Amino acid sequence: FRTGQGTKLAGATGDAHVALEADGVDASTGLAWSVVVKGAAAAVKGTEQILDTAALYLFPWQAGRKDTFVRITPGTITGRRFKVTTPMTWWTQLSGAAKAAPE
Image 1: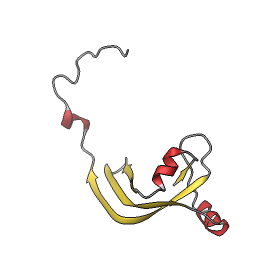
Image 2: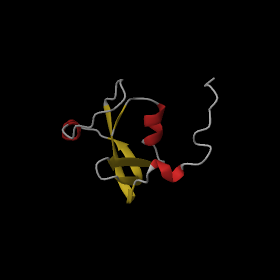
Image 3: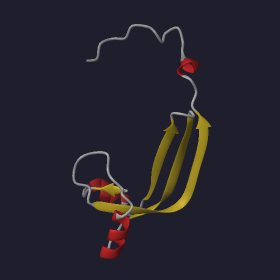
């Protein structure tokens, strides 16, 4: 993944292990998936490795400078697929109740 310089990058690439979760849903089929990778993170270094990583088209969703690539060496990978339930599954008589205005 891509990120910017700062304390979060320093914390993620230190001695601590990290976890990264990715989720997705196919709206046409209603099937969703979730994957969690746990392992050690390290900043990608070296011109050749950075160019190889840049070719993966890892674009951040948030604006701002994100010029550091981080690689996670997985210790464990878990995941699941599931069918998305309809919103009516969670409907109660309070679902239509008036809500207070935001503060």
